[in-house]
Image 1: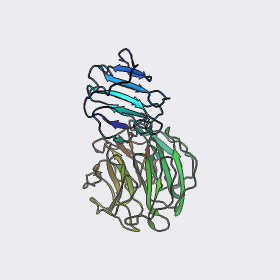
Image 2: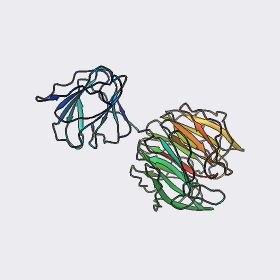
Image 3: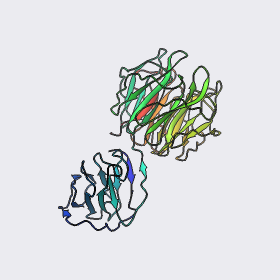
Image 4: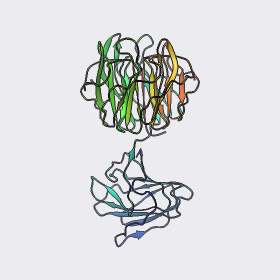
Length: 419
């Protein structure tokens, strides 16, 4: 399981609904993991450590399990419910369910395949799933003067690995985003100067790039992509011979949908990132010449909003990534000249004013989130291989000499929920 559902039924301790007869109580559990069975009750003691509780992989209607906070320590060391392939309160096993209130007790009853396990209590809070955190990243494609298909993985500690010979058509100016909680997709780009393509390449949760998939939608380059809706992605804008405001949604299986007529100013050479838990933002770019500082928010259902007058220096060819769990950062780019300025984006999608950047001014780079709540900028014009880490408070660090072939116009996205 990956992801998070915080306090999804309890806001404080409460009484467990009376159990059905015949429940068999088990010895106190002190281990960090335990697999439980139906028709049994468990005292879970997390005094010394958190505990992951794995539910049965097969259940029938009426099956019941009770879990009790033995030492009133779940507030310090929470329990995590692994529903083991079955649904939990209508959500699938993609999510983690955490209970972290001291004195909680759970009476879990299985209903059916749709709802799965349902907790019963005299205190009920709304179920609020939060997207899993992405731990690793990948940079891929770009040009050294000639287009390439190489990639470089980024570890959960922000270390860029050496070149991996890429799979798929070599190209520059593609876009990339996370999807499906722990995977990524690269799409579109320019396979030769001014030759747009619409192919995509999926990235597995182990960072392996798949072969070309014939794309859906108008071939273009210089577009951007963002995650949205916790497990989906969106490509938008770009240049198909002229600038566009088209968009293409990507479902949680990595399937790209047909063109949607875009909202907002047509442009290319922009950047995009996710923010909040389920939204995205596109910003900056070139509307067929010159630069802009416009932005467009993306709703949790993948709808792009109208232009918002931007804050900060108008520029093209910046990069953007999510950081801090629910915020985003735009950085670098080409205005009157190459810049190293950054602009933070709040968890409500508000772009802040310029922050004087750290590191070498450049453009045509890319960025991805990593390590759950941090980000990294890397590469850029002209054939840079340097990178700059971004802390979970949005502070950009000094240049780190990069690993791998220096290049510009690559794309990047987060993948994997495992550190």
